[in-house]
Image (cartoon, helix red, strand yellow):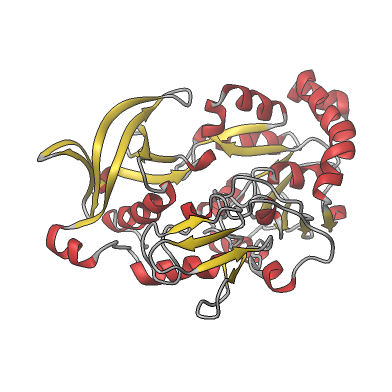
Length: 408
């Protein structure tokens, strides 16, 4: 078995797996994360298997694939491979690149090759990591993809607490136990694409606020828990002032510059109010208040929008992404989002314009870099000067979908 795997994957990758599996994981990773696993015996020891988890953390591939008891392969964002050392390192662990939110035939062919050779492959059907524990949207193409692969066995994995180990917006990690739960293998032979998608959505759904209500049954630890949170909560959940929140001096809470409301953040992502006039919230509940206030598609200032057509604006830089993480400057100035386009201005002069009908997708990559993929394949990066990239993604995506006639 191992000799056949070495012939297929290469000796270098096999050695990396043995090092991680038998040295790094037992001595460091498993005690650190305190993995609590149910259903790992459902993973086939031989033959092809497609493993579909929800996506909570950059370490999901390690946590999920480690239970296979054999080397697993992972579909990963192509942006990671532009970081040369990281791309090399994760490649040795079985990762291969996938362009996010677009059809990538090279990646699909790689999965087909792996499945045909009896390999376990981990794919995240949501396509993006969660920010607050709630599931992201499962894309419809997963049903067709399973069918095109010839209906291999599918095992689902729920990662229940991975989003609390290091929330996507956070700057530091926390010590919390990571809970994994594997389903029994599913055989989708004869199922329609729509039926497969429905099962996928049902099998990987988790309760993102479960631990905020119940807590953990063991010790946990973290420091400066709220650092990075204002990038996600880009308006105060009390007065809804944009860019109103700041991190408190101890790093464990947030307070609003405008209304004075303040909260302490617990390790379970529960915001505990500092005074009786402000109510306790979870991070996801706070974000829902922002969505309810600014609408869908969102408008920052309704009066300004009705007068000028501007949805959102701020100083920003637009760069063209190459083969590495460096970007070539395209335009820099006052960036404006309207119902029709993104545009950069300097005074009365328009320096750059991208009609939203020519934008295929806006995606948040590692370190929350905001990238814009055009229909012609060109990849751009948006770098706001003083605003959150999460704010811009929240506004661009629904307006882009509306401009292209897609459901918001």
